[in-house]
Picture 1 (cartoon, helix red, strand yellow):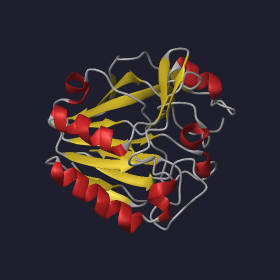
Picture 2: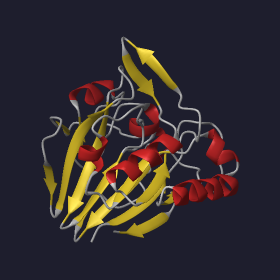
Picture 3: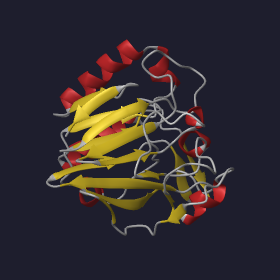
Length: 238
């Protein structure tokens, strides 16, 4: 069993709501192992839990890595470029190679490159324990090989920046930015993932969470999915 606690679910937007006040931070627990995934600047000097076994950073943007300081009391796993972007680099940073499995007790984590930013390259995470697998992609512009990357997962945790506007741009021929929520739900339908949670919630969601939640549930239902927004403090067992 994997236990998820969404301590923070807000993107870099200045707009907040009671449901989405804090920058992205997800805690994942299995047996006695505890990991924190991302640590946005809101969390600087105030980790929401006792010392975890490790922190894993998806990329170097401030709302995902700005809370990491040089006195973090546990290992911090990051890509080489993400580690280089940290303004207060911890002494115990450990560089992970893409697509190499990391093991933490019963948890297995495989980082994989995902288009989002050339300056702060993003790595999605495929996280498994026993027969349970989830995908964590809080910032993503596009996704190739959808079925192979998402296939077999019981849960997709994705980018809640916007419903219809895909905030995409092209940099040096590469797609960067944020895919729309509707596109991500379509990916999940293609790959057979039936449960979706959206985190990293943007202004459109934070401004009216109730209306956004109803719209998301309806859109997901039309595709045969159960879809909802993660909220600060939400706990889920997988």
